[in-house]
Image (cartoon, rainbow, N blue to C red):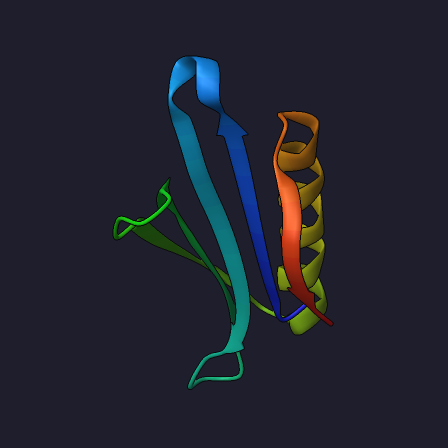
Length: 80
């Protein structure tokens, strides 16, 4: 999982949200899970979580993706 893009739409509540995640290497043998979310078409909020290994970052991203899918988000783009 290097990049995942999800969207959730609910026309009744005028809800059109996106959530995307990236796993990227850091400068000091660490790895980050970069998360961005917000309304589709608008710039999102960005947060970064740091991990000691790539596997830890990917595992956290997979868990987060599963939680988002339970809330109604659908995967539109995923790169392994």
